[in-house]
Length: 388
Image (tube, rainbow, N blue to C red; front, side, top):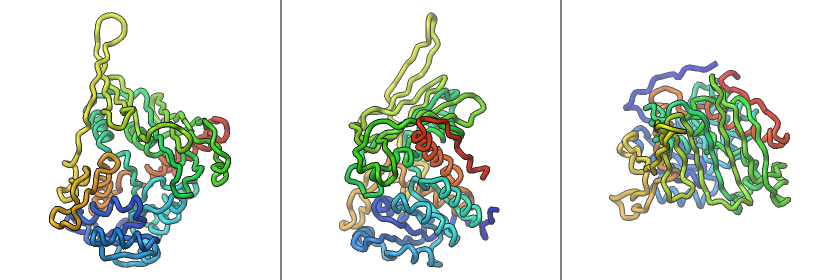
């Protein structure tokens, strides 16, 4: 049972936030420090040298090396977790159990039991849980979302997502990770644009990894590719491919949406522009297909002016020469949008997007896809966390 929040916050109210994990987490520090509804920021990292480096760089006074200090503090309302993947499930439940709002970098967890535990903890606490999925706040996603809302794409006929990344040399918990355990950068945007979840999956593993990469997770595949059956009133499928090792492809997170009126395709090379195809009627066989390269606009208009500049790489603090370094622009300009949604959802006493159930449905799709791959492509039903 969901417990109602004690109070409804007004737009003038402020919250006190903690960031836990200052590798990737350091990228979010400026947006919290400058957000008009954030009263204070505490930073936490087990590496004291890193903690002090980031704290000194951004002039953050409140610092700790212990997550327990964050959990036990009565002066922190919300926690943004950017800890290693194997800790996400346990850390998120711990935050929610002490009745603090929780944001967590993806993936939410790497097994269905942990997903269920997080959803249950969120419902019991009545606090917010937000999956900090960068892919659903990028310029390209916001552009295609607007195309759909305007009716430009028409009925979606098919979707495709892909995320290629080589993880050699990354921290040890990445070594041999099943590709679909970390597939939300490809899954999230296509499920969100289809406005539904996947109900079943067939997935195949592909390629060969060197033997030592099998040991940690028992996963033999550097690449996994899946076909998802979407929970839709009319037939709808989505294809997702994810690679982590031994695949000569430059880094990309991408999605394609194929519609009856128009199609959006992500660019193949990082510095290119995406393509929009539009169908036009003509006499004779087939239809005329026109296409154009588009430049998805930066949506700073959706953000408070205090943090809008962080969608682009810009000077962090023009007033202080010691803090005039470049900051911002990460993951398609998504970082300040994520921070703003998390903070705003708390201030406005509403669920964030994506919330716990939505995030669990996205992550469960990848977990079930890997299960299918380990069964030679067998059909695997995907649980619906809204009904658990």
